[in-house]
Amino acid sequence: MKPPEVVKKLPLDKISRINDTIAIRSNQIFATMGFFWFCLVFSLLPLKWPAAMPFVQYASSGVLQLVALPLLGVGTILAARSSDKLAKEQHDAVMETVQDMQILMAELHQLHLELHAKVDEALAGGEPETAQPG
Image (tube, one colour):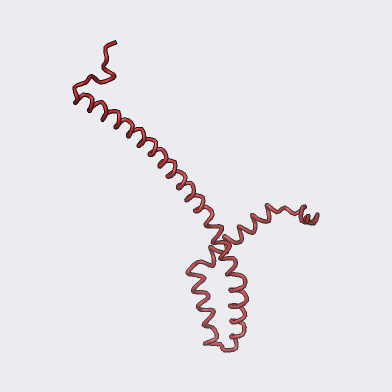
């Protein structure tokens, strides 16, 4: 199924950047102690003014749960992208180092075997292969 022509004309990359910016900035606001204290004081308003209870319930269930929670989730995912990228780069670098170390260990093992063979040959009284007169 092809998308409608209207959708093709939309600047989707710009819309995506705007959405990402809104989500990250919302996450930066909602995930603060200041916002926590605001919500705490807001939820305690009906203790002083009981008539405010319906508005507080509407605002907390409607606005905070239906708007803030999805924004927090998306913002958290977007903020984690950079740390995920860094973790992948670090993993790749470590794995490359491990491969290099495996190659070096194989070379070292081969040198050890050659040296061991030459020492055994020297102890047996024979001439080492590399010391043959030419």
